Amino acid sequence: MEILRAEKMGFCFGVKKAVETCYEISKKETEGNKYILGMVVHNKDVVKEVEKIGFITIDEDDILAGKDPLKKGDIIIIRAHGTTAQIVDRLKEKQVKIYDATCIFVDKIKEILIEREELGDEIIFIGDKEHPEVKGIISFGKRVNVFKNLEELKESKLSSSKRYSVLTQTTLNKSKFLEIKEYLEKHYSNAQIFDRICGATSERQEATKKLAKICDIIVVIGDLKSSNSKKLLEVALAENPKSYLVQNEKELDLSIFSKDMKIGIAAGASTPEDIIKKIENKIRGNFNV
Ligand code: SF4
Image (tube, rainbow, N blue to C red; front, top):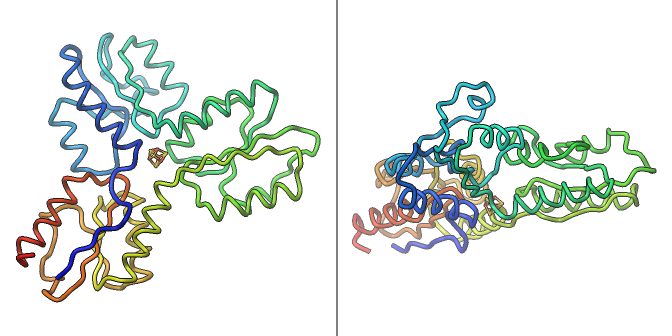
């Protein structure tokens, strides 16, 4: 038996930093209740760990509806996806202590959006307007047109006399981005395009695909509700029908393996290293490798 890990797997830069921020703050802040705005990461084991060190997950809708328990002096961490301008205003009104763990890649897009609007541009934003990251970024703008994909963009009536800045969700698929870029460059010379896609998701998908081609079986480690883990499973299944999504070592069914197998292990950007290690150790322990 051989166990191979995907070349890129597990926590991305932004998620790692947000989780570390929770641990730092739990040691540093001894007074006031501690909250996290939404799930710190789409992994229920990590959320449980963070709750164990004293954090309570709080819903953005509850804050907007005035149904939150926040009091002056409480501590709140903004997760890697960031949040909306309205929520930031509410938190300031409530005089809570804000620790902003928004990923720098998300923050950079927000900064460009604000700068370009100040220069007079209208914004074209490509992404899923229901995604928390997109909701957060566009809430800081005043003239933002959101399009889900190239098809939607083609149906719109852009002006040839306005100046546009084009921004995207960090996880937009690179080849889709290039199609959009090509279309805009061909039809709208008045659009300036900013490429701020974060490679973390696509790198994990590429690495999983590569691994699935050379292994007998693939174990994708991640939360069953995490969209990036489910996407990794899809990528693996397309190459190898013996691909499984497993949340943690307790749920790992050892009967799917046999002694002569080459096992590939992949994990999404929301999966912590200790869960990966526990799964790896369980397989090694059972088969003595
Ligand atoms: S996927 Fe990229 S942009 Fe999103 S949190 Fe991770 S590093 Fe930041």
